[in-house]
Figure (cartoon, helix red, strand yellow):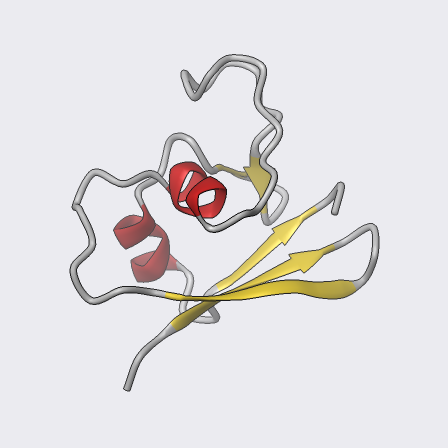
Length: 85
């Protein structure tokens, strides 16, 4: 059974996209890069260094500082909430 990430826009109160998670994920793929590669706009002025905090998802998680695999482990709902979408 394949899993998917559900991206929810908090500003629009809508599901923005449902993204299937591929089976062969690189261990170091950040959540931010995964979202960008799948057409989701992620705010970031620091280029993924982790200092601007514009890429926050679910109110507290810096998407540039967590891998997709780590996110899957700590977030069983597999929901990504982005405030400005």
